Image (cartoon, rainbow, N blue to C red; front, side):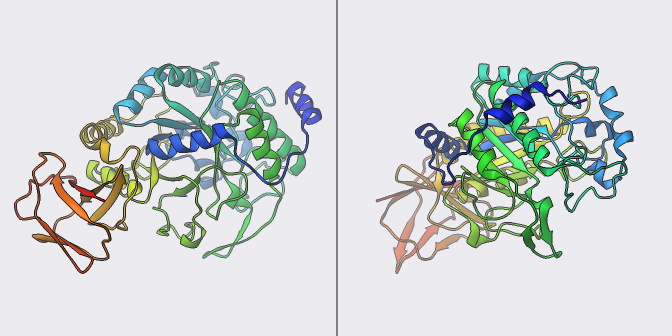
Length: 441
């Protein structure tokens, strides 16, 4: 049964907001912080973890509403320790955490007053996971973002249905406007019950877009973004809004995200076109293995080197890197994930200066070379060295010196016709990334 008190209070208190978004000073400052942070932890966790088959298991196995509703009754993560999670993030060099408050299965991982389908009312755990994490993040100086799914396979009011979940038995027809109001209530809860948050990470827009197998078409519903975005900014002006819609920036958004692709890339087939990349802060999200949610049979764990290279390349695009782990149903993080995060943190302990607070460098990133820059210094990350000389064409500006980041040894170079030639014969190589410091005017 729905809890209606907050629902009606919100409906009668909502007013219309301006269509054109002008970010507040607090928001602009938050954007600058976000751009400098460069590295965050993504956490996909929900009752789906019990089945050990990823966060899309309800859709992929066409589990009925009645069957799926049994899962919360044995979701009891007694080993969940938010202080361990936050310490893990800090040890990895991460500056913020983004966690799923509600995924596409419709189950809320927080105490929501508008539904009983949540961690408090439907599980034996009876504790607000998000509140526990929010308190620990505040204590340790880690910003907390809430992932919130626009798509819902459980709520009847998510109607008309989108492209996914249509074979799930037991779904009924409802009213779209009621679903919009439901989301307004839940977003209000997330923005008023957990202190100051970093932002809201939206997902599921694409479910209501036409798709021909190659590209997205027209949007079939009105998401009421003017109302949702204005509500978020009104309640917490500094909170950053991002939307994983795979298209250009929509008015009211504060950062632009890219799923499983570097900005402009399209290995997935539904990546954001390069010509739709805006001027907002950027964020790339990727899995540590092959799944977002806990998957018992996932053997696609990325190497420590690949993860560090992804972080470097993201920074080379001027983007943050949001790296995901899927906790087990008991609340523990897989040991292999913990080990990899520690290795990334060890690397950042040494090379963090070349990543944090940097902007994209003057040389476009590729698989062998990535550049970042900060305070008049260009950092060249050599991911792969295949020759004794490195030639960089179309390099403008005067070079004062080039040094090895680690031992500060000077490195020979020459500039001829806008081509920078660096002698690599005698430099000390690093197994992950050999970093050169280029001081320029």
